[in-house]
Length: 470
Image (cartoon, rainbow, N blue to C red):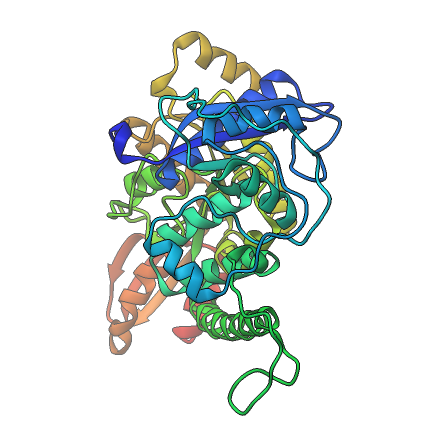
């Protein structure tokens, strides 16, 4: 449910249509960016686009579009040349208390394009003045700084929006550490944007090193914190590897796909677990592992993984590598696609590209076209023709979920073999282990003990025979 308009900050989307990008492609990207902004907690009130051969080096768009953008935010539409007046931390704090919102962040004096200032007293053309500009590209710190000075609004690029959403949604310790690491990697090159004063160089015991500026000290603190985060994540990863060793011989399925494709809804339907289900991007950041329900024999484990998104910053892929390793450990990948989304083809391509980056593209997989309850029969027929190997389903339809469970069980049963096990009366405590590793087809008792006809995977059957002394 959308919050009432007054309760959400107003935002403007800014995009450059580069050569080779069609109008449909741009519309799809902006629709996704709009959803990201909504997930962040803001409301998009206007969109500004411009066709260019590349991003303007100074402020992303040309001077005319910069003025148009400033009309929506109440800015001047001009990026002043030269650095703004120096402000120390005490002055910045004083201005914040007084509500002075017209001060832009520091600048490094880079030359910028000139533009005409917006008309004096001109009201924003949107329903209300925007306080946030979101750029559908990864931009440099100087470009963000120049946009902020010209518009008087906060500026975030696509990567910044994603990092902020992940920061808010992280719940587990591992996810919080991963997101903090990615956030620091994003913030580090933008430190001069923070307006931290005190650039004078000084040394002293317990303070800065000789000749070390405030900016250099902040950068050193960030480097130290990132190093500490990496050490903590390595320790968590070692612990997870130990757990994975115990699960390695078990049958494992990983749900992978674009963010908000319905993976968590399928996870809940397949396992009966109370995982978080929300109609928003990046609702799931933590890998959840649950047993297929009703339980299969041998048991099958299902993992729900973090969703992917177009233009996912590389530092985020690196930070979530340990989470994505669940896909590498799986015997079967289920690609979950939102069939009702017009951009589902591109979303599937993004998922495959990211999995290829981590080396999971060689694992057996199945394609699931989810949310078919939202489309008509004609669209379903078109999808069947386009993806003949795919399974069309809705996570909300119990019959579809049962059919998918049967497919998963059949995948693992294809490699199972029949065998006979003898369990002496003195080893009856191992019957539970037998039922864990195999499906018992028949069970008879004689004077020596139990004679079991079982169906199991070859490796599991061999383990049981060794455990029982052949």
